[in-house]
Image (tube, rainbow, N blue to C red; front, side, top):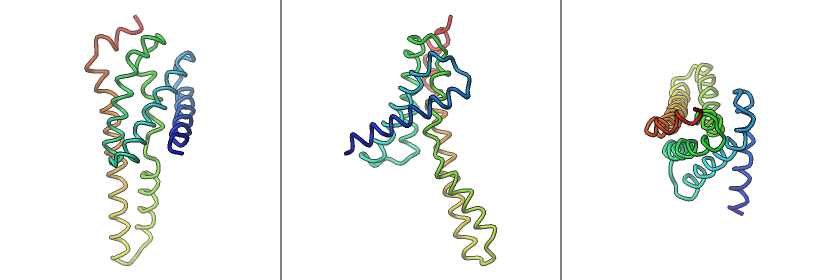
Length: 159
C-alpha cells in the first residue's frame, strides 16, 4: 500500500510540475525532466516525513537539494537551463495547507472580540505563517545551492 501511495503522489507531482512548467513558458522538450524531478523530490519529501519522522521544513530542504543536484545533469540531457527544470519541479511542494490555515486563522482572529479566542487564533496564524515561510525559504535555498556550487557546469549547459 505504501508503494502505491508513493507512486500516486509522484504521478500527481509530475503532472503538477508539467502544469507549472507550461505556464512558465519553458521549452516543451523539458516537460519530462520537470515531471521526473518533481516526482523524485515529492516522493523523497514524503518518505522523509512519513517514514523517517522529519518535519516538513527539513524534508523540503533535502528534497529541494535533490532537485538542484539532479537538475544539472538533466539540463545537459535536455539542453535547457537547470532553472527551467528545477523551478517548475519545486512548485508542487509548496505547503498550501499551511498558507490556507494561516489566512483562515487570521480571518477568524480578526472576527473574535474575546481576548482568549483572539490570542488562540493569532498563535495559529503565527505558527502556520512561520511553517509556510520557512518551508518555502528552505526550498528556495535548497534548489539554488547546488546550482551556485556547480556554477561552471550549470550555467554552461545551453552554450
